[in-house]
Image (cartoon, rainbow, N blue to C red):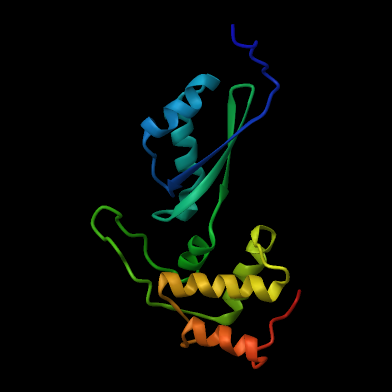
Length: 165
């Protein structure tokens, strides 16, 4: 016999979804079925809470207690950067391997680094800014009209000061 179901127990499930879309119920069903939740209802809740991130891949944390799911959106650094580029939402099925050719201000990069600081592996804030600049390299955008690699080199050389707070 399995142990008795405790209604006050909190269960946390992480799932990666495309913002604003009702995800595949087939991926939700094996995770939520044993907890007594309807995958369709939870999928609609996820779509509603990720509306701000329409067309971008974001991670959602489902906290389940008393057969009620609460959805928290945990966007990645690339999601923050693409949103800061203010690109229109795209259709994933039609447009593949897109390059994000916009240019961000260095202040935007610092703002995103502040949001990502607690999840960063860097020892200090300068390292977090460099992590965000590395993500800029991977998505293909520039910073103040320059290559993110050259901005990282200028930070290392001391030509650009990164504020700690």
